[in-house]
Length: 336
Image 1 (cartoon, helix red, strand yellow):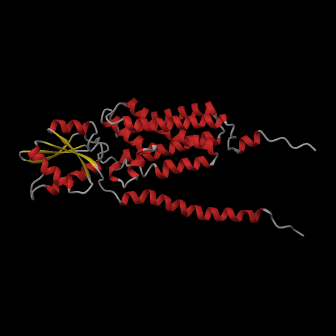
Image 2 (cartoon, rainbow, N blue to C red; image 1 turned 90 degrees about the vertical axis):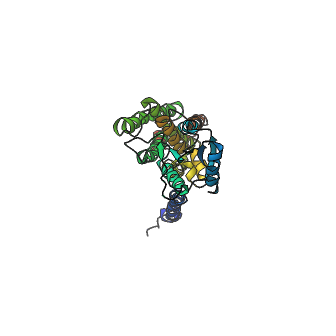
Image 3 (cartoon, rainbow, N blue to C red; image 1 turned 30 degrees about the vertical axis):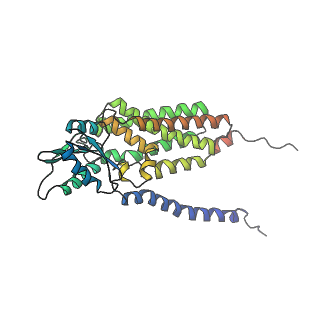
């Protein structure tokens, strides 16, 4: 008489877990990607107003009627407003001139914001009057809408996740894992810069600075994933991928601007490597490094914390979650 398989009942809970987990993940992904996209609108968007007080004050009052949309910065003249745009203090500026308002934009900072500002200022102009627009920091001719730059966030996040996961599943630990992550991130940065700058022409700054930013962004993600895996085991890879890809990518604001995303999404996105990496890449490539301090610090903290977690996990003696390692070092059979 055959005995029933003992493995079949144990499969039941796993089947239920998979059947429930997949729809939950899909729902979470749809929320993370679709919800911010459907709630895009300016929220405390930094905008300058320049010119004599008598002419500029009415413009400021009109802009402040857009409840909470703009954070107004006052400048004495057009030159000061241009400097603020180039320093990434504001996304654009309205200059009061004897002939009417004049708009300064920076499509390199965000083509979406530049278009939004043109529409908003044109609506406030007298009927039939065209508002002159000056693009102070234009986007590169090869990527006028910023689509290529926005598309670079997901591949970099995936490269970092892959690096962290491969280091973990191949059983690399401690110093060896750290060195592998550093080398992998450096190579990713060089390859990515060669593609985006040298081939596609969508980045126009210093080549090596851009390669450094791309490497640092990859290292921040890879270090975080490997560090979480070193501390939590295999589940850390899933947590890291969820954090960097399903949250970091849609919350990055690279395709629009952090101030266009609903709060606290825009703020949180800049605290994650994909958002900080996108902001830092814009600063280095188009603005000569202006506004790079905050994003660079964020990426540095993620990278250092992740690599420190990798070293800490090795010191704690957590076994590497790999079947290969288990097969290579089987436990001795009990005596007796």
